[in-house]
Image (cartoon, rainbow, N blue to C red):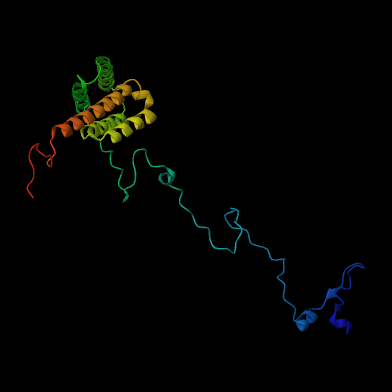
Length: 220
């Protein structure tokens, strides 16, 4: 049994040489064969060093990155898309100064003779200041539009609506209208009072249709 494990080997070996295992034992046990490490690779004939062999796939040469891909697009250029650029704002027609001042001045002339001269002169000075600020570009577009609406309500004898617009201007744009809006407010009040007096006079001049003539008796 010992011959299966140990061979006598060289009889001239030293006392401390390890025993030599039998080849027959390796073939009987069916163990895996090991690749001997004593094989040497022959050196190339031209003397150049030989690169080590690798078992993986050969390396793939990637092209260098293009400089155009990372370069940002130039300023001012944009890609064509389906979104249309916002259209330019529509410029609305500005209210003309004469469309506002002329009806106010006409209303003031209507009040002369029925209103005290001092009151009319103060209203006239306020309207002149309104004209000066309007012509000098010191009034904003919202103020001009509301004044145009106020004049329209005044012409249609809508006194309450005109007074409401006056109050809204004093609340929202007091710094622009405070110097002359007092005259406009007084003009609205005087024009209302004058209209009420004219209405009463018209009613008093019209005779009632059912008025009975003295000395005339209706027949039964």
